[in-house]
Length: 107
Image 1: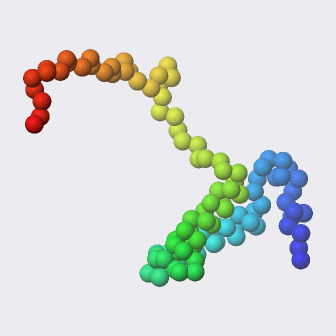
Image 2: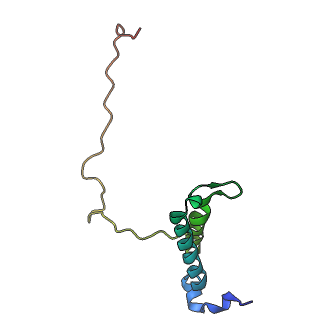
């Protein structure tokens, strides 16, 4: 049996890069699971001994792939102006409640 720890270079381990072989395997598992869910109606339903099939065919491999990348989120572009403020107007305040009239009650 091969030792996969020795196939990664030392600088890739220090940079936090995932194992390329494991990443390739997880990409294939996600692609196959997605194809199964899209093409076969049985893969979209509930299986008594397995549970909800799309969870195990697509969801769990995607979670494993995300965990392989140490749960990093994608970098979204910032849409803030130079000042860094999000709002241009002041925040809305609640109005003071009007006093209730004693004579108007629902029957």
